[in-house]
Image 1 (cartoon, helix red, strand yellow):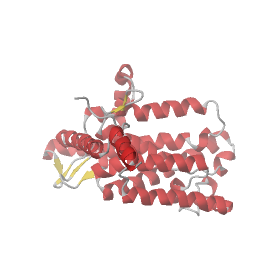
Image 2 (cartoon, one colour):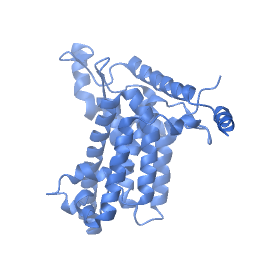
Image 3 (cartoon, one colour):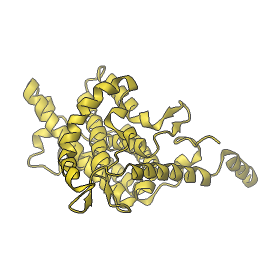
Length: 303
């Protein structure tokens, strides 16, 4: 029996969670506000030159979609991907992930915009309004890569572990043909990287008290083709030592704990269990969803 496809079946458009629906309402409401009151963009979107003193931009920008296409796409992706991630992580961790990732993305985009201004002296980097949920959605793709890496997109037969990489590749390719790339490309890149860092090293699992995901299949080099990994791994190891090198030093003397707390990524077995829970969650949704034949039968009976 073949494994179910992550994007196959009617279950994609059913079973949305209350939390995801609430977040969708926030996105729609934010879009309506900036359409009715266009000046609100200056206070809610991330405008690097105005972030100080308007520091709340670092939080609000991620929930403001300025275009109708953006709000529709973000809402659909939130509902579809969010219901799977929330079922595996739990509502509290799911909301925590969104908040932390959104804040880190905004901080990184702010620093990048300021740096680009000092390098190029182009003021548009200071005053362009940056907003949108795309950074969090990029993080959702990383989460899906973590929990169900081998599930496939039924139409193209692409495994979930490649969704993030393909998204970034397409975004970078498009950036060569559009002048607006600065408003979305850094958000997507930092959304992917910051989410990976959080999931790889810091996400806590209440049931085990462990942090992170040490599985080799979730290493930074796993975002790249196999032939590039010998090049990527040495570079990634530098950042790995920066993030948890001090913990590893202590591990040599005290085993796998530091002050009684498990170290980041100290249990690969738990990482495997998370993947199994993700696969089971997906199978349960697909199993409980009515098939296309059943829907046609019900419709015929109603007629």
